[in-house]
Length: 288
Image (cartoon, rainbow, N blue to C red; front, side, top):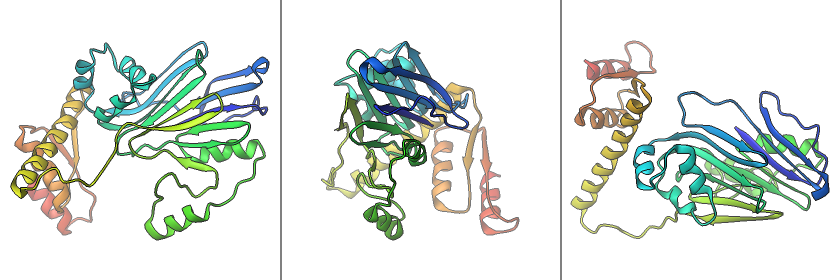
């Protein structure tokens, strides 16, 4: 988790429980204060946080196809690859990054913060902007904590709340808190001084790619196999055991089949079920 703040208000005493304050620059001559805090990383992730004076590059999560992307862009390391993707004009690199992650980079030379999530937007980024403060964070709670500290009024976003009640999630950039927005799938957020903009690096549409059902099924199978392979190869790259969830349902069985078909054998399966229930019995039979 992370939170980045740029404010003309006094945030010199702001602290987050359980989070490390990486820097808190009181730049009174420039009439604003920058603040950044984060939680600790899991050693199994590709995560990193690099700071150099006022500059910052942060990545949290797993880049499943890191080996392929490092080779494609001739990058010496994952931090180097992420810094390149977050640099001005290079954000479309994120369209080829597979995994679950979010990332931000700040460059003091041009006073620019760039933030991005993975294509599927499974590790979300939220942001807030008003006349004197910009906040970018990995959770709504981190933003509301800062807003309460700054004594800014919080209100429910009625449209966002209705979306939650109707769909179980919010669409577009809505959240349940008025003034707080979420960064959508396939987008980057760019903060230049007091200006906030959203840049698209991946657009989705419903135009058909195939008019032949057989060709469509064949491509879907190949894409699925490659996806499973990338995940299992990442385990090998990290020196980890292969662990998969397995129930009596079709989804988990297909995942196991894709791994087995490609030669992966040393698998540990987790099953969440009552002993003797169909989910447990079928899963045990498959493992045998």
